[in-house]
Amino acid sequence: MTRTVLVTVLVLLLFGFVLFIYTAHPEGHESDVSAYYIHNFIEDTGARNAVAAIYLNYRMYDTVFEALILLVSIIAMLHFFKVGGHG
Amino acid sequence: MKIDISGTRSEIVSIMTGVLYPFIIVFAVYIILNGHNTPGGGFQGGAILATLFLARFIVLPENDLDVHWSHNLEKMLFAVILLVPGVFVFAGLQYHFAALREPYLIFMNIVIGLKVAFGLTIVVFRFGFYEGR
Image (cartoon, rainbow over all chains, first blue to last red; front, side, top):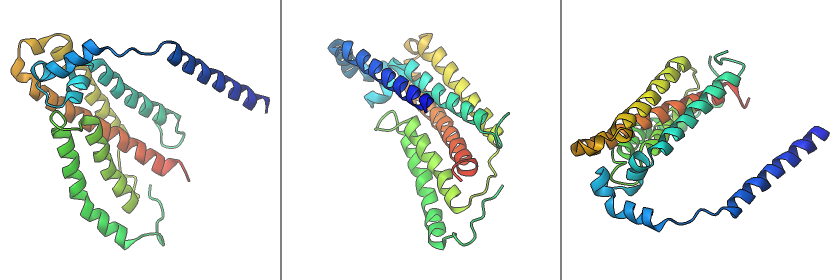
């Protein structure tokens, strides 16, 4: 019982902390960058879809780590399932 | 391993899923191959491709997927996802070979789509056969 309360308080504190970070440091709208992307993505990347241009060229790191998240979650899932897992 | 589905098997669901199979494949391939021109891309198309196996799981719950094989294939595809942009984008090869920019986008969408499809298929099969029962 105390363990549940402790975990709940911890999660709520973490939630408040993340909310505080978000409100204390709002991400500014970088109009220069977005204007550059909108006006130059066809010449820069050859894509006609600006989203594809951004996630496969300008912000490639984002895509790499997004793919890594899926891989890591599947490794964890295979590891923690007792029946039929890896270990 | 096989889940006992006698008594719950539906002929209507089986036939309709069989009819939907080719449309799912065509839609997924379309979303992946046109990801650089229209809304869509590797992640979305891969998720649609994974619903193919989800539909098959509903009709025929038979665990004949080799998880280790598909998991190793997924790791190899992730190595490709690391290497190809590493050479083409991060090393700056795209500034010397402008003609390869569009083929690069198509290739990356295909690789990401296959990787996501394999990953989500593993998730569906694991949760379908070992969890939630």
